[in-house]
Amino acid sequence: MVRDSIKAEVKNLNFFYGNVQALKNINLDILEKRVTALIGPSGCGKTTFLRCFNRMHDLYPHNRYEGSIILKPDDIDIISPNIDPIEVRMRISMVFQKPNPFPKTIFENVAYGLRVRGISNKKVLAEVVEKSLRGAALWDEVKDRLDKPAFDLSGGQQQRLCIARALATNPEILLFDEPTSALDPIATSKIEELIVELKNNVTIIIVTHNMQQAARVSEYTAFMYLGEIIEYGKTEKIFTAPSEKLTEEYITGRFG
Amino acid sequence: MAIFDEELSRLKEKILEMGALVENSIKDCVKSFIERDNALAENLIKRDHLVNALDVEIDEECIRLIALRQPKASDLRFITTGMKIITDLERMGDLAVNIAERALELNKEPSIKPYVDIPRMRDIAYGMTRDALDAFVNKDKRLAMDVIMRDDEIDDLKHSIISELIFLMLEDPNIICRALRIIFIAQYLERIADHATNIAEMVIYLVEGKIIRHTTISE
Ligand SMILES: Nc1ncnc2c1ncn2[C@@H]1O[C@H](COP(=O)(O)OP(=O)(O)O)[C@@H](O)[C@H]1O
Ligand SMILES: [Mg+2]
Image 1 (cartoon, each protein chain N blue to C red):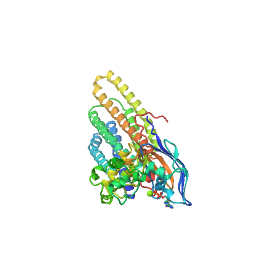
Image 2 (image 1 turned 30 degrees about the vertical axis):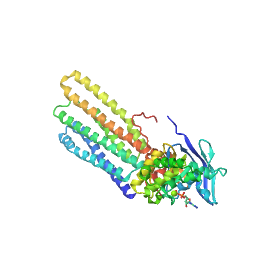
Image 3 (image 1 turned 60 degrees about the vertical axis):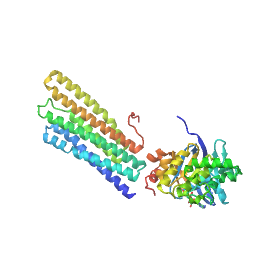
Image 4 (image 1 turned 90 degrees about the horizontal axis):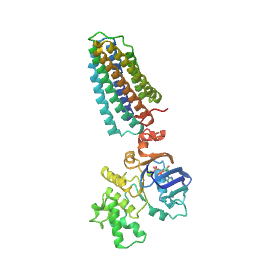
């Protein structure tokens, strides 16, 4: 049996918004090129946990991490103050709940991450933009209007554009925070198919409050409650025979 | 989720209703033979369609719940287990009908001997069925295990019935037709107990989330 290899090791992770502890002693291995879903009731800490992975919390001075998130294979601790958050964000990209394209052209939205990194070679940019748009299953729909504003696209297309933008820097981990909650069912299923396809090349962590979505796209599921991981395991196990009573109650809609 | 809970408990009641019909058939089929009661046998054969109708109705309800409620965890296990249990119950009903048919044939001729082991087999099979369904309702793993253990008694009884009848047939070939029908009855009862065992195994899946079919119990 082939064992999945570990992409990130979360060890004794605590997180504080000022005095408020939002994550409590989280320990969990994120497996490489797998989709891991984070589920749990509103306010349980899913977004907070996800944001640790690309150091989003560093933008506010009172936020504080404890513990470590060890990124493989080079074993750097991505929440260590010695590690540059910009460096982390190049390797770990985030796609948000609401599509948030920049007020620029389709092309420039995708090229953005590369330009920030000082790449201006037109040929390189064009190549990466095409590759990323193909990777986000958007190329065929936009290839003739790359110079049009990103806001001309539909909501679902905008979200795929944001995925293309995230892919452009060739990240090792992609973070999704409820990526389809603003989309209709067809756009949603396109994104879900895309996620399943993307995991061939990249490790994915997705926060979702739609349990059917977690069941459809993920191989591993972590159930969180009050800032803790209550149960973590194979998605099919969690959805057919969870070990913890709390998980059972949440999954079957009998919570609280 | 209150609506879904109600739907689940209605589903459970329907399964138990089907179970009760089948339990009665198991009791009556052997009785119609032992007490040479043709009316009882005919009545049982006539009401088998009720079991079939419940089988279809419950199956449809389970499919509806899966499609509309997307059951998970223990709810999912309850519904899928229910679907399988009714398949076994339906087959048990058919076997009881088969026994009643053999009884009607046997009742046309004098009996070979007083039958002790057939009612005993019936009592065990009946008890296994009732307990398997009780275990299902109460999610009682121990009772389900107990049902599975009892399957061996049934097998032993069947073999002793067959050996005895072989012996009698050798002595008097005139009874061969009747003896064969009785052997069929023993065979049907053994199959009924097998289905009760299946139900008990599914109860263990329901409780534990682990499929134990095609394995041996090592507790
Ligand atoms: N910026 C913040 N400052 C203080 N508390 C916050 C902040 N953001 C979130 N929280 C609190 O942290 C907890 C976890 O929130 P969050 O990670 O957004 O949960 P989820 O994504 O699971 O709904 C909640 O109790 C929330 O109120
Ligand atoms: Mg959130």
